[in-house]
Length: 127
Image (cartoon, rainbow, N blue to C red; front, side, top):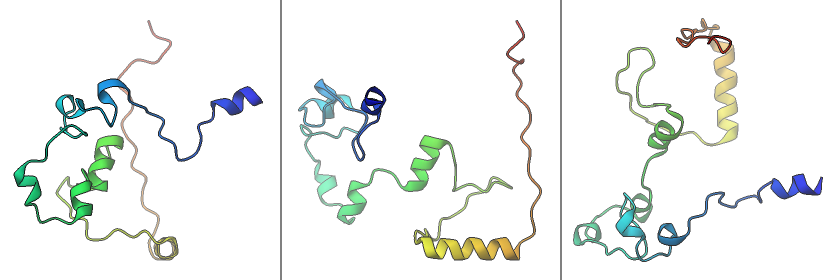
């Protein structure tokens, strides 16, 4: 049991650690990373004049962009027609979310389940 417990990571600890030139405090990190961010990089004059809030400057991507990049979920495109959608609100309060979901379960009829087409690859047993 002790050996298994040793494999479980501690909570709130990054599981990916970078060393050498990829380390966060490396003076060469800005020269080799695509975002040109790191301790050794110089801020350009155009970055200093930017009138965004400090939070907007720090965030590299919105949550919708992160969902699309990591999980391939595009929340900015309509599932029915593929058209562009605009995010107008982000509800994060669990009580409000519960009320909305309870109302939707009462008010809307059950929709048909959309089945995806089968895989095109042959089954595992084929040679």
